[in-house]
Length: 278
Image 1 (cartoon, rainbow, N blue to C red):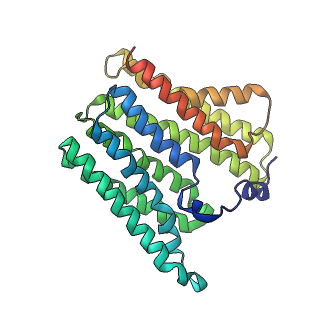
Image 2: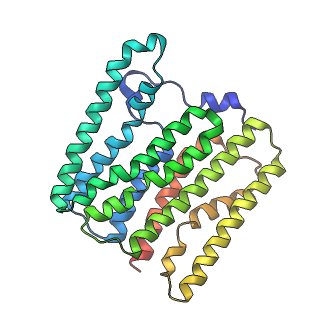
């Protein structure tokens, strides 16, 4: 079983300017998956959508200098202007790319997206100061905020906010929320000494609830209220859970879960692209 020390040593400190790039697999996975899935389901690409991608990446990268700026104290004061200048530079560049996207799409609604995402970002940042107590809630809030990339990309593609857009957005939110649930279960198990049976029961609960949600969506789709492909989002998470339960292994390897989430995100992207055009 993995210990708290093992969890801390999984990610060694980075040297040079690599600290500027957020290290969270989940955040990058959500951003890229939301963007590419929107393109795949819409089956189109516009210059505005291309300009939007660096704008969103820069907004995600704001996290590192902002967190460091908020935590500056003592000897760290000498880095204050460094963090502030990087933060302002990233925001400025993001605004430039966002303006190019809005101008190319001839839709000023793109400017509203950072304003809509800001409350999610602010709450997630504040929860970061609670340490482990607020970590799970922080990840849940961040999921809703990061996946606003879906409606943003939809607007940049010149499409209106229709059912397909909301299915992709809410479906990806569900997918990644369950991913957060599985990850937190493993981390809590490693840090609190949960036995294998408790971990197994938690996994059964997550897999069972995901199955019920999927069955519910299928039933609703049979009455014509949703397309059948709305049931896709939780399939990769369910497959991971049931395969794990059937493997007989009591715990997943924490150090590999980030890569597993990237793999699951790729799977859901492919599934969405296939079934949306079937």
